[in-house]
Length: 180
Image (cartoon, one colour):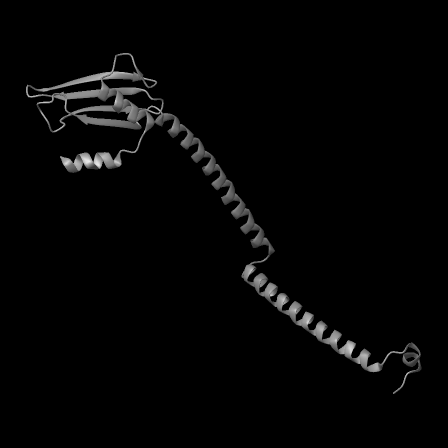
């Protein structure tokens, strides 16, 4: 089968056949791909709409939006509650510092201690308990904004510094407990 047009253009009919075959294969692959995507979409839609019509679906959306609004209100309230709790906590004792020492060298055992307890604004007190053979004497000194109006002993000042700077004393406290 010879064509005068193809001969005039100088095109071999075999090239046209090969081109058409390749085009057919590509179109078939695209058709299969689109069909698979359509079937997946159809099954997703069917599972989404299972047992529902447009009216019940709309009611479902309204219910979900109402739940979201409720969650937003609760979240707002929780944030407000957290702010109030944080404000109240500023007045609670949050920072501690303790020093154990020998008040009188003849005693031993480090039975005396200085304990500083401060709130979030570095207000609080330092208690000093000095143990001797005759008895135990305790003194308390008020702390305002990290400062004392009464002169602090060396151990009291160290306990105050520990409380203010909130150093980690877990290891030291554990060592003290283990020694006792």
